Length: 70
Image (cartoon, rainbow, N blue to C red):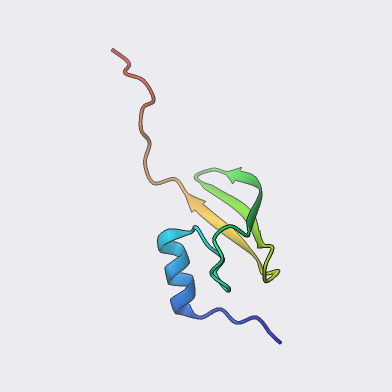
């Protein structure tokens, strides 16, 4: 059986990112190390329950200071 991702499932994942894009299981995700290139980072993800693999792509959106500089 082929694994099918619908646009709706991908949209839901992009909003929350806390569960598998295919089966929806939250505690079955594993992320590999993050590779950073400029303002973009990529992380290969996988689900233990349904064996789906995908790549999350992160883009630098803002920064927040950890401590006051004054």
